[in-house]
Amino acid sequence: MDYTDLYIDGEWRKGTERFDVINPATEEVLASVASADIADADAALDAAERAMAEWAARKPRERSEVLRRAWELMTDRLDHFAHLITLENGKARADAIGEATYAAEFFRWFAEEAVRADGLITHAPASGARIVVQHKPAGLAVLITPWNYPAAMGTRKIAPALAAGCGVVIKPASETPLTMLALMPLLEEAGVPKGLVNVLPSKKTGALVDHMLHDPRVRVVSFTGSTGVGRKLLKSAADQVLKPAMELGGNAPVLVLKDADMDTAIEGTMLAKMRNLGEACTAANRIYVHESLADDFTRRLSARMSALKVGDGTDPSVDVGPLVNAETRDKVAEFVSDALAKGAKLECGGTVPNGPGFFYPPTVISNVPETADCVHDEIFGPVAAIQTFADEDDAIRRANATEYGLVAYVFSADFKRAMQVCERLDYGMVGLNRGLVSDPAAPFGGTKQSGLGREGGHEGMLEFMETQYISAEW
Ligand code: NAP
Image 1 (cartoon, rainbow, N blue to C red):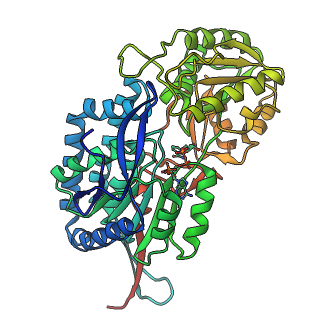
Image 2: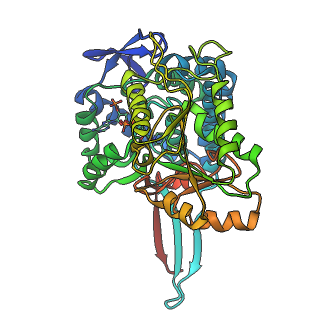
Image 3: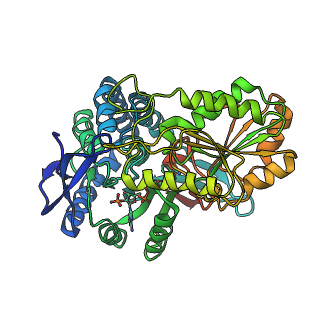
């Protein structure tokens, strides 16, 4: 591996300690990566502060062109990034190419947004003064990302932060730091100034991030990961009243209404379930099918799931790679055992293969009882858990009965009815007759304990900006 050190102020630093990154398909060590400590965090913040002063003063068009160049360069090198993503995360080649493309698109989208930070001038209704509203870069941002999308969860934060004029320090997940490190030479080539983006892999994550969140220069904390860690970060962020952007866990329901087109519902559910082999916050976690369609739906979904080829994701014929680590694989296996013990039926899959590699086969379980753990927690793996409903109101009530509110999916051929159901779902995003909602041009984010704020769309850049109002007389 070419890039395994800390990236601070445009330079590679060895750090005082190192940790291993494992290939989940082979369980072999891929690389030994530097682990940042508090002194490295201070150096990274110093560099980001220096670089930001110059970057924020640049014309929006100049910032835009650097981001546009990053999109071009990354698009030219999709294969390279996809390969790295597969090596460290395990996902199959098609998923990795999908992620690299999606990751690059954030540079293009925010290159376009960088020149559209609009404001407002209006008359104050009573005083006659002018109300002038404008947006300014919020300040240094600490970005913390998960392992399930080693490139895209980073670029979804870096691109809007740079578009807004902020400097950043990014802490990638310890399972998958290599892709983010490998992105740094590309950003340099695109014209990102030295020090503006710093990458600190670390095994002392809690202490490192907490230290940065208490540095008075930091104004934004943008996190993607589990709700449990998100809660901790919100508590730390409270001390300096930081601007938080929190993309947290999900428990996505799929509602297949009785008038659903079966082909569309199967296609959409496969995508919502198996994109990224189920290791996605947007993954279909609970599948509610109208009882009149349930047998046909279960049979067809099981046939599609059984036909998927499992193996090392670097083999282009493989559809489903390994899970990221043994813990994640074991948790998925436990969800299935628990559901079966509580009365669910195994339709396909369900057996952990011999190693090496953290593989789990595409699995379908039906008749899943409400008491099963997988109804209440994220499965985060290739297991489709099917329940039935007779009454639409009951299905909506069950779909909403969770502390999460990231994304829901609805399948129905009756558009008016489908829209009425969508509006009753307490979710930040709904896929209607589609199994994919993620789009750099759309506001991604959840309600309830799935998070705060939005990434992508017009909203994404505002997470890195402060609104200033000037009351003016002229
Ligand atoms: P995680 O355990 O919460 O870790 C995410 C990041 O937080 C990693 O970089 C991790 O570093 C860091 N972290 C862990 N403990 C920390 C602490 N005490 N203080 C500061 N940072 C800390 O989540 P994960 O297992 O990597 O990712 C899966 C979760 O992410 C799922 O719940 C999924 O739904 C969620 N997710 C949400 C979205 C969304 O957009 N809503 C997107 C993708 C994933 P280390 O790796 O060093 O521990």
